[in-house]
Image (cartoon, rainbow, N blue to C red; front, side, top):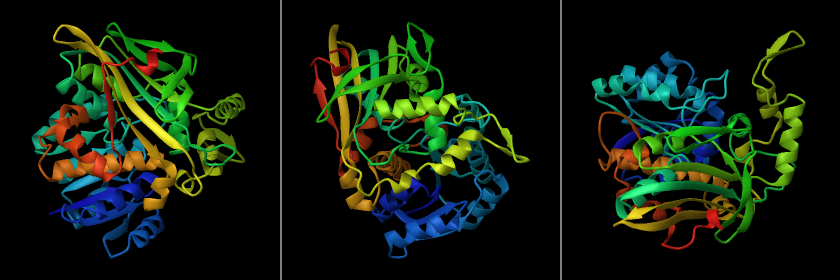
Amino acid sequence: MAKVLIIGAGGVGSVVAHKCASVPEVFTEIMLASRTKAKCDKIAAAIGGNRIQTAQVDADNVQETIALIEQYKPDLLINVALPYQDLPLMDACLATRTNYMDTANYEPKDVAKFEYKWQWAYQDRFKEAGILALLGCGFDPGVTSVYTAYAAKHYFDEIHYLDIVDCNAGDHGKAFATNFNPEINIREITQRGKYWENGQWIEIDPMSIHKPVNYPNIGDRESYLLYHEELESLVKSYPSIKRARFWMTFGQKYITVLNVLQEVGLTSIKPINYEGKEIVPLQFLKAVLPEPSSLGEGYKGQTSIGCQIKGIKDGKERTYYVWNNCDHAACYKEIGAQAVSYTTGVPAMLGAKMILTGKWSGTGVFNIEQFDPDPFMAEIGKYGLPWNEQIDMPLPIEQ
């Protein structure tokens, strides 16, 4: 039915490739490309059956990507490379009139800025080219935005309060490791926090607001208020929101090690001179930390990610909690992945399926909550991420 080009062969890229290969009636041809072709070949061999073609491409190089697209002629490019590479890949898609999607917003390399403005600026050009760009189709952003859209469609006349809660209660047995790209992960959590309240953004010192939150099947975990990019699009899509926050759990050991790394300068993104060469400390740190895709074996425990929402329906106050719990060991048994990669890769595949089957369509640049949530919610469970909901019950974030 359709040809897809997946760019990125890390943990998430592996999940996307596995999941696309499991739906041959939609993904009839699949190419996996990365800067390191050997990584693609390893994933293709694990999937087997000659389902995956592989190629080498530098996603920073627009002309290389254009050449690959023109050679392969995909119906959709699925970007699971680094957020730095969003704009070069969007440029390549524009030049070739190819539909585009990603799982995280663009970030400039030289400053930790998490904003959609650079990608939203492509709206007119994508519309004029007659192609679609779907932004943020992972879990958070991604499924959390679909959850919010589903709640708005079925349970609320107005959403007033939104709390996205993200817990990883797993244990990978490593002294210190990040569950996705270390460079992106550490940039994200060491920037100043930010949340939306009464029509404006409130900034806070990094990790300065935290509280225990009770997560289903897990219990209480200390949760820290961070800024996350889906908040920017959700408060735009749902202007009735009075407050929107994002919370993520971290263990005390993780916080202690991270503080030490910050104190000694290893989380800095400012280049330094070392033995006559310019290096970025955070990139060096990334090189010595465990590769996230290697964490799956022996990883125990669950993740729990969801949306806790309060608003009005038929003039009465209503609460709603929707969430998914995902088991690390089960993900590894299925496709050799840990749950953080799995929960990002599965929605990326399903978002691609929504586009390729015409369930989601349009021209221009879209955030995921702008599409009908129902077909996505109807299918996400059968691909490994079932969801649960509670209506008009006390919200754990407020207890």
